[in-house]
Length: 281
Image 1 (cartoon, rainbow, N blue to C red):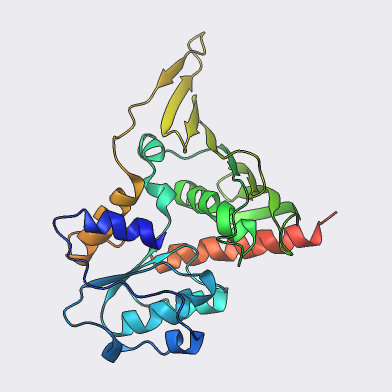
Image 2 (cartoon, rainbow, N blue to C red):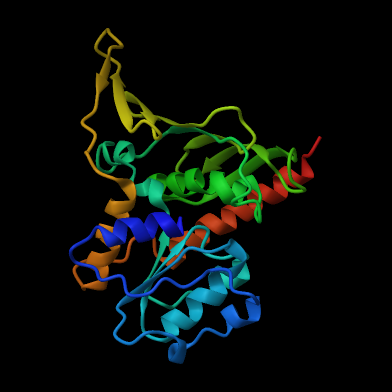
C-alpha cells in the first residue's frame, strides 16, 4: 500500500512528494523514536503505510509534530494504542472501501435492513501480522458501521486457522440497534478473489461487485424484479480517498474516516476475533 500511495501522490499536480522513509528500518526502536528533528522541513502531511504493529508508533510523533496524517487500516494494533491517538483532529484512517466507486453509487442516506459481505483473497504473506478479521473483514465491518450508524448489539462468529496461527477464514453474524442484520465472510486462503456486497433496504435490493466496480438495484412492489444498473463514478478509490484527505489538509472539509470512527471498527473487529477464536472447531 505504501507503493500505491506513493504512485498516486506522484501523479498529482497539487502534491510534492519530498520523502519516502523505509517503513522497516533495521531496528523498530529507531522507528518508535521518530520525532520532529528527523523530518524534512515544510511538510504538510504524511502517509503511514507500514505493518499494523507499527502504526501507533509512527503516527503519534507525526501528529505531535503538527502534521496531518493518513494511516492505513487498521488504526492501530490494539484498542489501547488506538485510543491513545484520539484527540488528534488531523488524522484519517485508510478505510478505502468507503471510496469504492460501487459504494459511491448507492443512494445517499441508504440505511440497510440486511447486509451480506463476501471478501475472499488468495494467500499472501502481506498482512499476516494480524488475523483475517483485522486484515480483510475490517473493510466490511467499517462499511456496516458507516452505512448503518448504530451500535452493534449481537455478535456471533466462527473462525479457523489454515496457513497461520491466527484466524484465516471467518464468518460472522451481526445485529445492530437499528434492526439491521449483517452476515460477513472473509477468507485469505481462497483460490480466487471476490469482493461482493449485497444490501436490502426499504423497497430495493442492491448488489455490488467491489472488485469489478459495478452496482445494480432491483426494485420490488411493482410486479417485476428487473435489475437496474446504477451509475458508477469513473474514479480510482485511492485517488478519491486522497482527494478527501487533501481537501481536509487544506481546510476545505472534514478529515475522512477520523480516529473515533476507526476505533469503533477496531473494537468491533476485536470482538469478532474473540468470538471466532472461542468458536474454533
